[in-house]
Length: 140
Image (tube, rainbow, N blue to C red; front, side, top):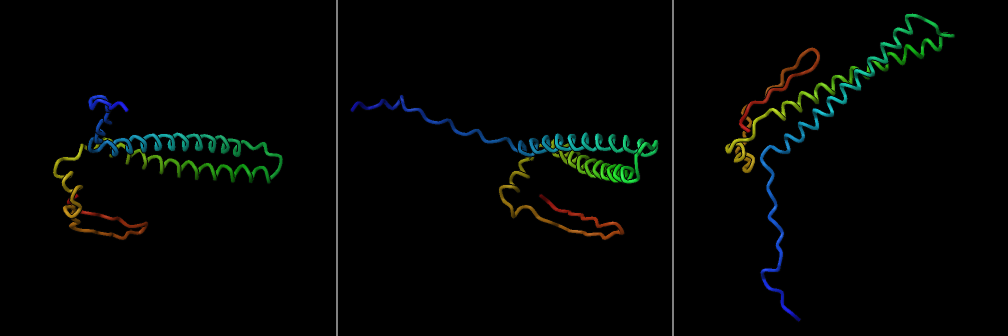
């Protein structure tokens, strides 16, 4: 058998490490897209609900059952628009924050490499009438 010269053996290139924060930016961009889609869907649902509302005001139903069905549909669409708007707005805001955050510094990279370096200084839960507020303070 003929031997292959050492210079002819190809080696795979070393993988290029991802830059710090690149996954965060990608996740933020995805959340912005999902949030925008949910906001658009909520706007469409609200538009259809308002159209149904104008039909309810003007009348033109054959019987009370048709009118009740239109009323129920309007309420369902209003609820869907509120939920989609809230979820879409929250997702878009979180996505914007993730994209806008600066790249991690050397100190935070050290803290990520050594989990014991991250410390939680305080945890505060404040109950309210409609829910609670959670506050965290620490070094991450």
